[in-house]
Length: 238
Length: 238
Image (cartoon, rainbow over all chains, first blue to last red; front, top):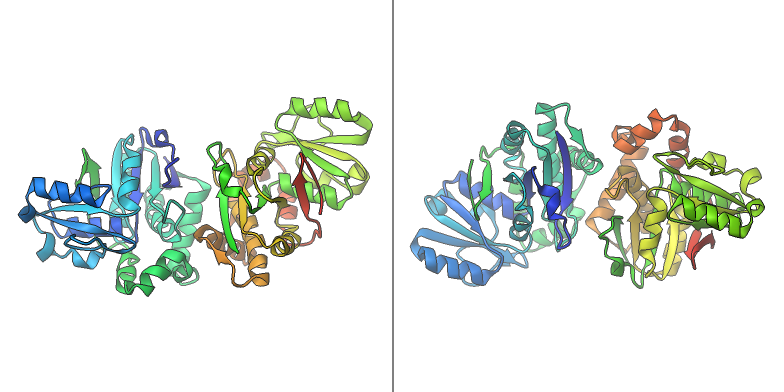
């Protein structure tokens, strides 16, 4: 099993995902919201590219049976029910509902992996569950970090590392690319405090906008036993 | 001043280098050879893409006034004078001569930065000199890691970190991208022994082919006071 990591941008080679298990990551905060919402028994998540798509879809599904969430510029889009904070997606808020989401980076990245055999949605909180699922699937794993503004984001690298580290424990003869090795190193050092994510642009901005408790939640390792799978336009628990 | 890092592949956005200082890195071993050869008073280095280009150019220049070096599959190309080991490029071997080079990754990457204002050739051994030169130029810095087989290589990330770390000391208000921060972290940990490059594909392969002393040389920090500059198809000392 080969394990590699890419960051999303418009020029990404979608063919690279063919016949693989893709894991899409946007730890701060889109895929953390998705894992949280499904863990709190949302029936499904439908990612859409633009806020207008979200409103149209909500009208079609029926406003009572769905919630609309996501962000632009880190903040809630006017008219959405929720922003991009996983702490908003409580059981009370989402149980039995469809969550329609549009975010700046994460939902765009999901569209790039359509040729993968299986598309898993990963984050640090569900890293163990995703690693187990990927190990069981057995295919090569290509992790797509959503990044920030189409550029690599150190938080996503750490999240990739959280999954790769556990996958490597289950499949010790897997082959890690250099970037996969770097991601594991970063996650180890995030945990032991020697790598400081708060120096990075995205974390710094989120914290300064008052989302510090989201960062704390999203960087907590392996407490959500949920494997969101993207198939036919929607994300459900495995 | 903004500082960012990219890895070369065929889809790279060459426009990203416009109006910037580009630093091309292939620490194992192409740009380490270049810095070493100029430090040992080679008159210039001409990078060419293919071995056939090297032979044609050598015939044109005159075989007595040049040496041909480089590699394919890490080893010397048949008919070349030298391989890709910096230890071969002694003063005796290169003083006053043109060095014609063709390598798998490094010489290809140099072609991608043609829109930059200035193109510097960087490696760990000349990291201080390159950082000083980039600081003096004052433009935004975009470091192009050559990578291995068109994919990120952890050794090149460490080398980028060796330069960024020093540049940051000279220009403390510079703005580091996430990947630039990651590179500095990797270089710090390479030095303190907590990041092990020998686990990576490229280092492991080089060592198993008997090039361990090259690795040791190329990872030694800041002892070559030379700034190779690429201009009009050739590389000379600043």
